[in-house]
Length: 329
Image (cartoon, rainbow, N blue to C red; front, side):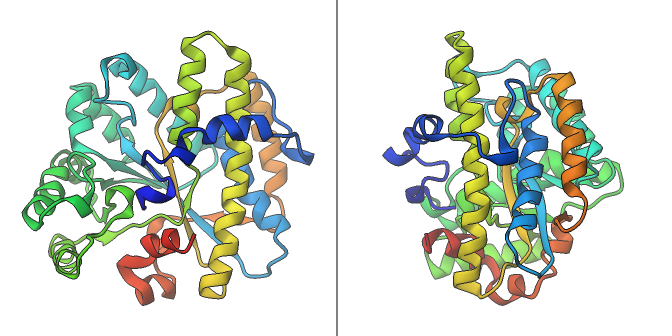
């Protein structure tokens, strides 16, 4: 995705997004949230609810993906660095939610974060190779492809796959998906051609994302609130995150209608972070029951990225889809 539009970047609108959303949030209908809610399950719930209320007859599908494995904050500043065990616990909770909802997912791995976590990272990645799950390459260091020369791009791709390819090979799976940080695929035709050729040579499918909730912005604010023992602020931020997610799902659906003329299968981008992995067990069971009832009837099917990428729009617009949708904003 494009930094200037607020994705992973440092623009001023991004910095106060969580705070402004928290102040604006209101309980609306069935989206009223509890103090301790299984946030990942509620993200699924919001995806389904959009499909139920949009009034569009065409079947809607979405692939769920997670970036920055093993953990978004691995390898960061010392103050923000979670322990290896807490990273493993976070992945365990997220994988449990995916398993409980029978949701296919891809975890995109940043090799430098694997090394930062240490030996436990191997077990974490192996857990992402179970039924309906797989791993993808998210480059070596999460560098912006647009700022690299061609040699640097090649190094990011090749060095980024080492642990991931080995992990998948050990369970009889192939490394098939590559996602570039920010969805940047090169800022010159030469870079774009090089990326396309190298991806094809290595057997990759480029996996852009078409729904992004900027969860990492909310996560930073959420962690600050927790560090200050401000539980009220933490709750407001988590609630605002879900409200923002609802708005983004609708926004990207409407953008697709405007640009493409229909709503193709979507690829949703989330991160393995503290915001997405926490939830009280009793509330989790309660919300899972509500989620189950909400799914009955028309809804948005959760598919693997392989199934989503079969849609004709992906072959028509190719690598530029994710970046093009962001520029259209």
